[in-house]
Length: 317
Image 1 (cartoon, rainbow, N blue to C red):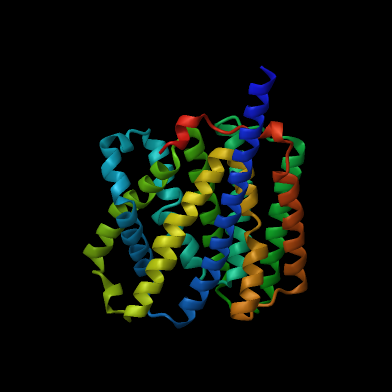
Image 2 (cartoon, one colour):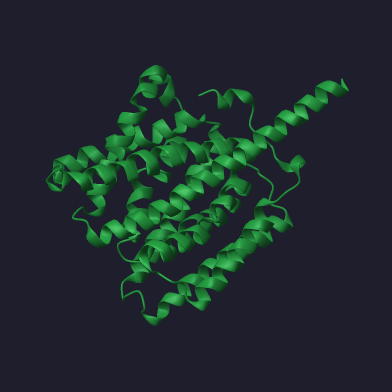
């Protein structure tokens, strides 16, 4: 009996390590994505709607084999959960998160979307699906919110232009949408590939079809290199690979801890932004990033016994 318990404990520890590794990889992709998207916005001819349409066309094509294999059973989820998945990580999220980078620097996107997503997720997961919110987590989430607020406050001097506030509003909306997605996936106990497929295929139908009818495939008029780069950046890495990695971590370590790890995005985004864009954080922004990091530690570092992975069936898809 003791041997069985020991094996189960080792298996649980391995699952937790895999979950952490997947989350860190997803965060690294998000940080690189934000910086690359900001850079391309400064040079590219494609607008937000064009990029989002291209994103989900590519992602839906990648996930089509899984959609065919699962058939109609893939769509047998509740309407609220389906809406949360499709909007929360799909077209609505992408319109807000991508569009915000046209108005505000990459570091601000990193400082708001994931951190505020962590805060929203903490309270939504606690109130809707009963995940615990102990005092240390609560303090961590408050620090995350305070750090994000400090970074945004640094833009009030007009350094990033008069329309940066539009980007801030869009990043805040994106954070809330991502929290809705996180809680919907956790509450509906969706498998990794099922959640991604629902998101990208649902978004391809809900957004791309109206886009074609109203605007036509404008991205076809852009240079071929730009279409290829945007397709890989948004469709392959942004909408598919990073979300699969995040979902793997989500089902292994839980919604609140997964979202809290996502709050490390500002640190990596700021670092990548310095290297690639020359966007050097101010003193206030640096302090905000430090406060965010402390909040991440408090919100996500919990004893192993507190990790409650989902049952194995949710991992098979």
